[in-house]
Image (cartoon, rainbow, N blue to C red; front, side, top):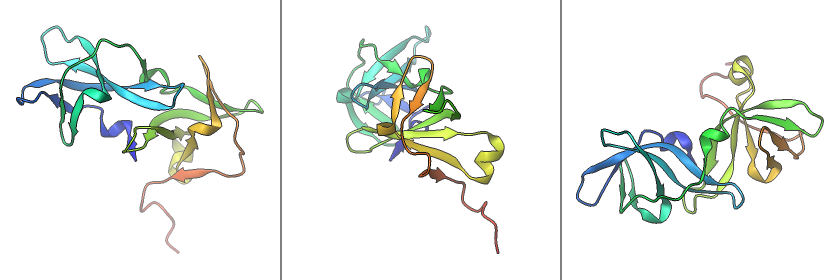
Length: 161
């Protein structure tokens, strides 16, 4: 599994090793549930932003090697970050903090949701699957069952008994 944190700030070079830019954000195809590319801040003096489509990426490692940039426009993950997730009862479950997607096909699997600083420390951050969400303009609707939840917690914080 990848997270958006695995790519933000990653350097992009061309085949000759020249720096092309740095990853600023993920580009999403929400309708099909895919990460389709990256928003890139070019290394030029103008600090211009362009897109890098997945089909133009040759290698992903400590740095990414790419063929060319694209001029296609997609929805950026920045538009979803901090968006509130609301259940069918109208209760706020938390806000989107990170995105989780598959390494092989870049399909979005779910979101890491922050429920507040204290609750994140005690219980961990909630993981909500994309299949249980309806993404709107201002909020995200959670249609799943509240009785079953997955949490991601920092290791070593549990009570030692």
